[in-house]
Length: 362
Ligand SMILES: Nc1ncnc2c1ncn2[C@@H]1O[C@H](COP(=O)(O)OP(=O)(O)OP(=O)(O)O)[C@@H](O)[C@H]1O
Image (cartoon, rainbow, N blue to C red):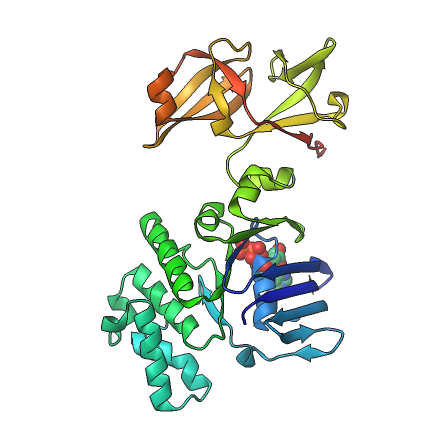
C-alpha cells in the first residue's frame, strides 16, 4: 500500500538543477533513510513527494496511485496525498492542546467529529501520549512534543510518513530514545517511512535501507547499512558514512610506498588492476581497520588517546598525516594500549582504493 516510487524526477530552482532523472524506491513497510550533505536536495525531494513542489519531469507513485506525472499531467493536490509529515520546524502548535493538535488535520479534512475524536485518541495511544491529551505543548518535554508530531502524522496518513530531520533539535540522549521509539511505532504499524537526515549515525540506527545522495543531487548508493559501510560504492559514500583515513599511494623503486607528507614509507600492499600510482591513488582505511603491530615498518607517533567506553580513539601522525585509529577494549586488554608520545607500528586492514582527488587551483 505504501511503496513509494520516484521515477526520473527532475527539479530546478530557476536555472539550477537540484536533481535530474532521480529514481528511488521505498519498499512498503520499510524505513528508507535518505542521507546526504546539506543542500544536496533532500528536502526538495520530500516536497515533491508531498506535493509542495512541482517537479519538471518524471513520475511519483505511492502504491498503485500516481501522485505526479509530468507527461500525463497528473498532480494530486497536497491535501489529497494522505502523507504524514514530521518536520524539524513543523513543530506542534503551542496554543492547542495535545489532542487539538492531533485533531487539526482531521478537522481540515472534515472528518466527522466522533470519528475524528476516535482516530486522534488512537494515534495518541500509539505513541503513548493518551494521558497528556489535555496538556499544552509547553507542559511537555521535547521528546514528548515530537511524539505528538508523530501522532499527528499518523492520524490521517495512508501508511506513509515523511520525516525530515525530525529529531535534530533534541539532545543526544533523547535523540537516541526517539529513534528507538520511531522504529518501534513503525514496526507495530507497518508504516512506510521516508526519513531524511544529514546525520549518518541516526540513519544507521533506524534504517532498513539507506540511500546516499551526493552534492549534485544524484544517488551514489542504495543499500542496507552493511552494504554501505562494508561495500561503499564510491569514495563519496566511503567518506560520508563513518570516519575515514586517506593516504596517497606512490611508486617506490620497483614497488609501492605510502606518501606520509614528509617522505615515503615502504608498503607491501598491492594495487588492484586499473590503478596506477603515477596518476594518483588514495588508499582509504577505516579507523577500526588500522591496528597496532610492533613489527610493521609503517611507523607512527601517538598524539592523543581518548577512552570512549567501548573503544580507545587515537590520533596518530604518520609523517605529516594525522590518522584516526580505533582499538576495541577487547584488543586493548589483549595487546595493551599505546600512550601519547609512543612510536607504534601500523597495519592497514581492508584497504580501499580511490583515484586521488584533483587539487582545485584557486
Ligand atoms: N525556494 C528556493 N529557491 C531557490 N533555491 C532553493 C530554494 N529552496 C532551497 N533551495 C536550494 O536548493 C538546494 C537544495 O535544498 P534542500 O533544502 O532540498 O537541501 P537539503 O539536502 O534538504 O539540505 P539540508 O540538509 O541543509 O536541509 C540548496 O542549495 C538550497 O539552497
